[in-house]
Amino acid sequence: MRQTFKLAASALALSIAFQAHAATVPEGTALAEDQTYTFWLLDAIKSMDPQINTDVEGSDVLRNLFEGLYNEDGDGQLVPGVATDHKVSEDGLTYTFTLRDDAKWSNGEPVTAKDFVYAWRRLADPATASEYAWYMELMQVENAPEVIAGEMPPDRLGITAVDDHTLEVRITTPLPYFPQMLVHGSTFPVLQSVVEENGDDWTDAGTLVGNGAYTLTEHTLGERVVMEKNDTYWDSDNTVLTRIVALTINDVNQGLTRYLASELDRVDIPAGQYPRLKEEYPEQAVSTPYNCSYIYMMNVGEKGPEALKDVRVRKALSYAIDRDIVVDRILQGGQRAAYNWTHWAVAGFERPDIEYAGWSQEERLTKARELLEEAGYGPDNPLNLNLQYNTSDDHKKIAIAASQMLKGIGVNLTLDNYEWKVHTDRMQNQEFDLARYAWCGDYNEASTYLDLFTSYSGHNNGEFFNDEYDQVMRDSKTAEDPLPFYQEAELILADQMPIIPIYHYANVDMIAEDIRGLPQNNVNNTWYGKDMYRVAE
Image: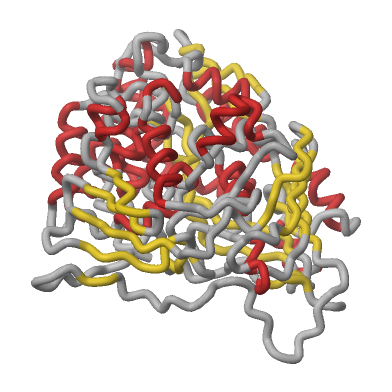
């Protein structure tokens, strides 16, 4: 949820209840002897480097190995991390963070403000080639655009270590949600000496030095990640789980089988199986809103197919997809049909009146056929396109359904399945026509979605560049109420249709009954092993 601030004549401290935040075990609770938590990953983690990782699953791991300025609690509210509090200047442009004096790296060295300065400069530095460099620009950090563009050296970035335990950040536009952005992994500190001494190998198990509640003891790419409790962590006395294991299983159905065999404590429920599992395992099957949206991104850039440069074709493709079939017949887990980009549960967001969202599916199909015919395509002259998706039985089911729906209007889709790394590499290189894509909010505010389709975004892989859209999003940064600008941005996306919205996520999980501390009221599903524990059966 959005943190709100009231600025008075002088700088004020952030009003958060600054209690230690780790596992809260009710009095009288019997704990299990084995405090291990094992969870499922669909894909291999591409990088353990906070400034390089781009994946949600990677973030789940990094959040346990590193700690940023703030964390989130089970309701999505900010709680202290390395920072115990902060003050904001009267103009809302300078944040001064007080860092705890008991934060340590896993090698015993103290965590200082200089570690954050190094990490943030490293993120923005073009030499790092981080896909998340743009996040510094989204945060409005002083000189971030110039540093990212190579026009200024990284030491001109608006972040300064006043002393070991005081960090100053200067931004160019007041952002009420700025503190919320600090829970993102790209802002986590890294230890300069370890990075520079070990180069690309610094993230290897046994070499990686973090400041989180756990240390990396094993990482077999595409198989497993093992993390053990870090005794140097400032709140290790209140950390109950001693071991966290992530198993990579590319087949979600196999993941469910292994969960039912007690090899996993959490797994995503395969498409269509939630109703049955909820009936059979009412205490284990869970569905809650999740801050992610599922789309097919269209390559409208120079390397994309000529047909997709025609907005009539893009609209026809979108209109022909029956979202209700996807959510009601294929997924069946509480997901919602999507006709826009921003997730419906994002704090403070209200979807504008998008015309085609109010049509019947028959009306959408009629319009799709008309538009495609106007563009010169149809059953007698079919449009041939490729749709790529990453390995998952659920993605495959949706892709097959989409191909059948589009065939009815004269579009032949060739389905291409790639492993996650290949899939994302191809998207980043614009080597696709249409591609399955999902975005999970970096924070609980609509800009985390809408900034993605700006020309300065690091994730605008379909290369939708629109001056009007850019200006609307720039104007939103200085607006007292950004909602009208967010709604205007959504209307531009609906008018230009660079994406095909499919559905808004729900977290549809099987969770072992003896696991406690996984958030159920946080739309970001931001979880920390240090907040969890296992009860005795």
